[in-house]
Image (cartoon, rainbow, N blue to C red):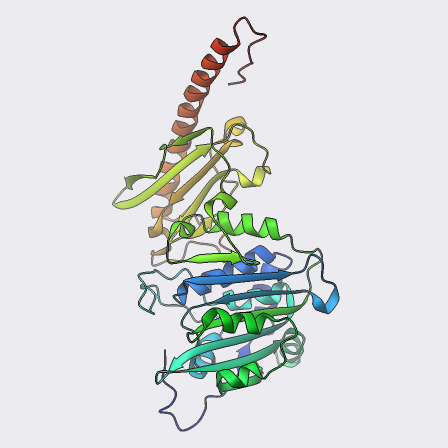
Length: 395
């Protein structure tokens, strides 16, 4: 992080933007998609080297102004200089090398627009961040109003960038300064307790524009499935309303798994791909939660439902949950992952090679599953002989 103590003047905090950028990349891309918003903030926490992420949801029982969503992390935080030169610059790409903060992590963020995600569900966003400057932890606290951003943007000329100065609640402040501020949600106190004498960032979203209350159980499941790969690490814990998200929140009980545990590794050209696939006995989940998820550096890149284009096998893929880890997809010079990380541009030559590999694998997985089901049914028939009618095998 940048040491601002050597500068004679504080950097000006100014958000410069085109009205249409905020509208299309903030409002429309994430509008009424709170799980996508939270996923972006969790990714930012990962990139900041956080080991703990606390997600607080107060939307189910709360009403009106009492509804809020908060995401706090124990990452490296941001100095005033970082806020001015990075956070408030829309579209500034992140480094694609391993994250700083002494963590062996490859950054999940790439496009520099995830910071707009909260405005898809909230009209007011507060950012409280603690960073270490000259061995001392200092706090910066901003309040950003969406209505004012849109107003200034619409008043700007067609070829002019609008400028919006966020409200600085505190800059380069001490812990006691932060503690003395009003804390109506209680999330600031929780954040300070979480980081202790360390660093981190709290994003507090209020005046929510969500049409429906946010379901906590659904959020836990969604986070588990979006970060299935990352959750297995010991140095990254995601919590929702005080309860840690585990693989059990994301994964059902499988009747058949390939391999039985762990994962397999193969080469697609000169690139390494890891994978595993499970089949459930009863497909009680929604259809859009089955199929294959392709992950790059721990984050979903191609969301379900997806089957690498395999058709006519829906009766089987409905029971399938597969995880493919293809980190190289996020390392290509050309960005092939969509902004909302729901799909990959499979026309890219290296992506196309993975697509062809995946289609072959899906067919092989289904055949192995069918063989396993026939074995299960044969065993069940043996147990039912003389007892009653044997179960029917639809496969």
